[in-house]
Length: 170
Image 1 (tube, rainbow, N blue to C red):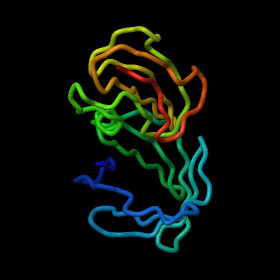
Image 2: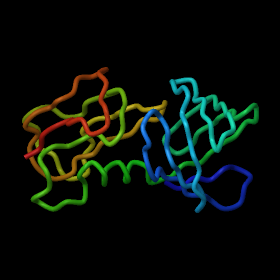
Image 3: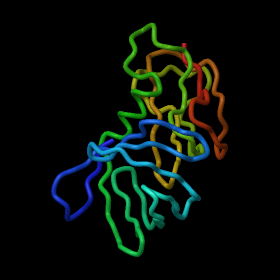
């Protein structure tokens, strides 16, 4: 995913290379590998150790494209990938043809903010099926193919884990 920190020229890419278990990860930021251990993460912020150094980030305001944080006492504004919805769509089965999978799956853990379709409704590829909230960001989950909603597997206000089936579309 691509990020830009306000007042810093250029952008940087961040990605998880390996999940080592117990909230330990090998990540890559701007072409360099780092060790990351998440100590605590909730709706207010995150505490972590990056390359043997402790950090604390407090979330102030989050939208899909921008996040205001205080990291180790310093205010930071991050412009996140403007194509976040497209990335979630692609990774939840979007981009497949007529033979695409039946199950629409969540690519992020989160809370179900809204369900925009009913069982029996016809949907087109790219229609918003539901909206999830994760880390104070709302993400529209879009239909990965044209078809009919056969089964909705979630409830408004409920929680979903990564890879949970949200709906079946045939």
